[in-house]
Image (cartoon, rainbow, N blue to C red; front, side, top):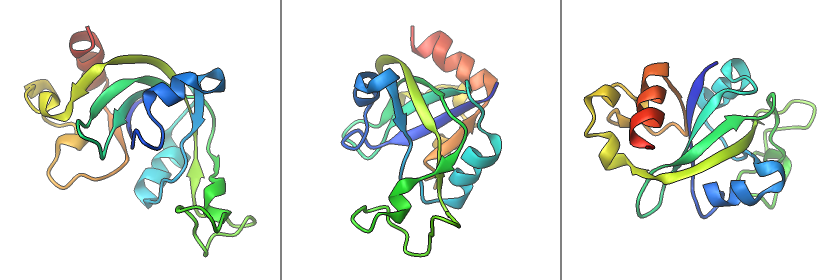
Length: 153
């Protein structure tokens, strides 16, 4: 099992939206970074743990837990000219962008980014590194255990 931090803007999809979705599952659309896409394509597996992170909001931070719920498949927004995620170079026969489905497991009290920064155990988390902007990053088992065992209690 692997662990991930996945960022979502809560005005697009929040942890509450995911919990309210059918089967508590949402398609993780709109990823337009090759490294993040490659994590979904090459490394994510059904059942992997996800820290559901709210970004680009008043208080960014971990808002809950989720799990990877599907294998990767083409992101339909790349083909939709009306979508802000449209990619005119993507073709149905040669998609450029993938997604996975994510199933919300539980909402947690918000764990703000500022609080994450105060714990030496999390100093190596990619989200805490200067200049880190990836929407999907791996989380080590030790980081996952610290967050779920200490900060979510």
